[in-house]
Structure formats: structure tokens, C-alpha cells
Image (cartoon, rainbow, N blue to C red; front, side, top):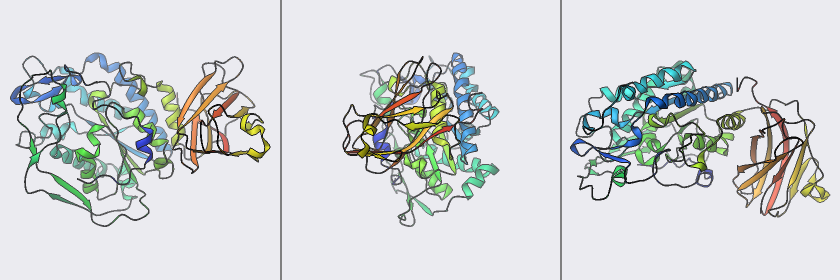
Length: 461
């Protein structure tokens, strides 16, 4: 199986490494369930009717985000990886039952997504009806929570069919260059990599017979060109990471290059998507088609879901404000204007070039200061280009009369090249009138092309 060589280096730096698991599950001895015929399951798939209200909030946010994408020329196809407990409910232990809510959740969620204008490609129906579901090479690993290579290929084929059947998605696909990919299968079966559920069982749970699958390789027929820009991106979770073969299968069935920016499940879809949008991978190469793969079992985990790792939590409104700012292809001028104050680094005339700041090494406490002629509003966002050589973060400190001072952190590449910055500055009061930007300890800092832009007026309505 090939690795995606198109993924930009930013991804390794922008995302925090973490332990294997889904967004709401930590590795613990009681997370696994032993079913019949040595089939294993995760307890997090036990969806409850009480999850519906939170899932509705998630769906609303996705609908608003999709509207922003469409307005900026990006077409999104969303799909949900179905819960293993439904696809293989016959192997659940007698003590665990598939409830009516679990049985119908995929269909209900699909309807709700479509109602807010999101194109949903159904994976549940073909998985339930596939003749390979009960073959000697099932669609899910028996000892793992992920789909098998057979399931990954079925998922890819289903998404291709969904794209072909949708006029808008098909137009986006046709606007991307064709690239020939070939597929080949090994002549023998080998032990599978999928076995995460074994680590979720209590100690001394017994021996489970290993699984074997035929390895499949997908390769590009021609060498990659120096311009490795792609028109299709897959953003997803552990089900679409390289090792599962799903994105390779999608490359083969679509005959297209694909950028894969999928993240580990516990990082979650919200952080993964925001990290991608803020990177050069999106800012310098906005895709025509975005495939966002979710896990059905985490559809109720909003950006501010209380049981997730605090590192990955975010106010849901502010997540939408930030991601919408990153997606905007052009700057709609705000009624607020900004200027660089002669303070901090800009107090030294040698560091100023017009309204830009260009300086050498900076320390932790050095800053530039930007003032606004009126308080910035929730729909306003700051846009600029910056170089922070050696520093991986920018700290923005918003302040002003009648508002609580607040700090915002922006992850940056930290190299010697200029990169786009876009960030709203939401406050709990009337809005900030000043913002200080701390580049941190760096070998050099440049800040230029400052603008204050405006989000779509209906973004939060």
C-alpha cells in the first residue's frame, strides 16, 4: 500500500500526537466487548437516544460550514463510516442488543444532513446488503474497529457512485486532472494490521485467532510531477488514514490524485478540518472537491463536546467563525479599519517598512500592536501575511475598554516563508479596540498586508 506523498509537512507539526482511539474513547480495559465467534466491538458504538440533541447541533454546524464552502467554490461530499455493531449485529453477545435507535440512527442522521443542504453519500445501505458482508473476508476486521481492505474498497466504490450520481459533485470531479492508478493483489494472505480492540479488553481475556487478508497495492502509473497540486482532498478520521487503504482505493476508483489530511480519531474532525484549512495545503491549493469522512458513532461530538480531550475542544460558534475565515477566497472589507501602532517592535523605525514590520530575532516578550478605529465585531476577522522563522506559534492578545483581555493562539509553520493568517477576534463584550501580536522567540519576524475583512452576514443566523 502506498503512502500519500502529497501531504504537506505542516500536518506533522500542526497536530498533536496522541494515543490510538476515537474522539471520545481513551484506551482502557473496559472499552472492548467480546462477541460471538471471537468478534470484538467497542462500547462507544452503543449510541443512545439522548445523543440526538447534540447530533442535531453538529449537523447544524456542518450545514453552515458547507454553505461557506459552496460560496467559495468548494464542493463537499460527506460520508459516515457506519457502526460495526449494526453491520455485524449477529455477532453481538446476548447481553448487548442493537436498539431501535441504533438500528435507525444512520438513516435519521442522513435525512437531517440532507435537510441542511449537505450532500451525504450513504455507506450503511451498501454495507448491509453487500454479498461480501458474511464472506471469509468480511467488511470489518473481526478484532479491530476499522473496516477491512474489502470494506475500504466498497466504501471507495460507493463514494465514487455517489459523486457520479450528483451533478454538482461530478462537475467538480471532472474539473480535476485524471491520473492513472493501477491495483494489484498479493498472491498470499498475510496477518492483518487491524487489532486495536485487543488492547481494549480486560487482561487475561483469552486468545483470539489472528485474521488474514490479501494485501492490495495501489500505485501511480506515472511518476509524480514537480507540481503535485491536487484537486481532491479527503479529510477524515482513523478509517481514512493511509494504513486502512481507503484513500488508495479512492485514488484507484476515481483515477485521480488525492490529498489525504485524515487525523487520528481522538484528535477529532473539528481540529483536523481547521488544521487543514489554515495550512498552505488549502490556502495555496484550494480543492474542487472535499470528501469529509465522519464516524457515525461520533456525530454527536460537537466542537465543545464535554467528554473529549480538552486539548481538542472549542466553542462551536468560534470554530465556525475561524473555519469560515480560512475558507474565504476574497476579503470583503470590513467597516472597521486598522493601523500599525508605533509601539513594541514597530516603535523602532528600522523595523518598519511602510505599514509592514520586518525585523530580526525576536524574544518572547516582544510584540507588534494593531489598533482599530472602532471595536471589531464578531463577523470581522484579521488577515495578513507573516514570517515567523523558528517560532511555531503566534499569540494574539485582544484588549480594549469594557472588554476582558483575551489571548488567542495561532499555529504557524515557523519557516522562513510568508504564510497567510486569518483569524476572528471574538470577545465577550463590545469588541476589542487593540490587539497585540507576540511572535515568540524567533530568528526573524515579518508582518505585512494587514486587512480587516468581513464574514458573510448570514453565517450565524
